[in-house]
Length: 167
Image (tube, rainbow, N blue to C red):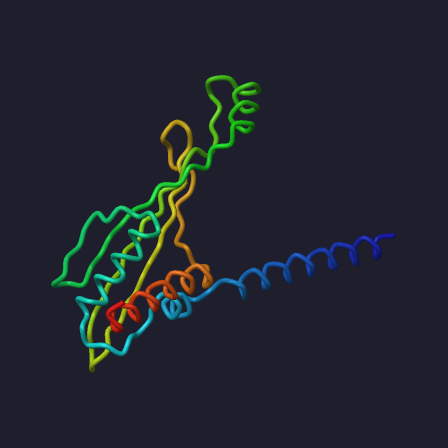
């Protein structure tokens, strides 16, 4: 009986360790994230690229907060409503005036455009901040979804192409 117990404990420990190592291996390194946050373009006109990035952000509903052409820096924010009426009702029903729920998200974008060797390089970084109904911060995290950045840069690619073709 005691041996069965020890074998069970050892098996559970191994399962727990394997899940932890799987989680660690799924995390992206800073270099991997930087790689899909950055795109190079075959044009030395960094200001035109910066204008295209600005246009894409505005088309996606971002409000540009700051633009510094000399540094190639753009910052912008976008707000998104997360509130679901059912969640608010039930949390208020059960918890009264102490209830909190996810109310809205603020997505902050910062983009840097630089030129080097007849190319322009764009690095974009997006952070999402989730706020509750009382104005408290629920969560702040960097968006590290490669598909999100691919979608953003495909719009920038298209804009640069259209600008080159004068369309």
